[in-house]
Image (cartoon, rainbow, N blue to C red; front, side):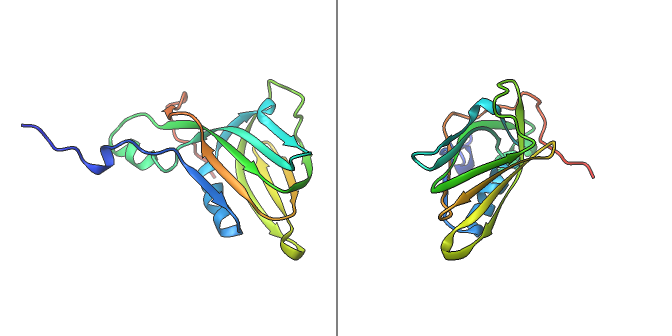
Length: 159
């Protein structure tokens, strides 16, 4: 007996999301939680006023399906870019060490005057990157096909 294909079996399109306010950014922050990236994949283009990261993002949106079907959890490479960045500050981060790998824990936005504000990227191990922005504009875009997470596990944060 043959079984008809189900909608959820179809190919999923890569994520391409834009955040223009704090609520939108909270969605992106959830999707990039526990993303990992080497220091060498963190860039600020001062002239273009763009700060970007090439992340290995855990596919939280796929995790329930992977668990249900007892298949491997997935990651995907994605670009997370912030526009209109006027200043970048960091603490506990040495971007010149190419072997250093960061894990992104959270992203927060603190609004300022006239649409300006501060985006804070909190990294595991007490690292922080702060972006002063003229306006909130962030883009998350998957740039590769998903691959099985090397650890084979979903990230967890025991209390």
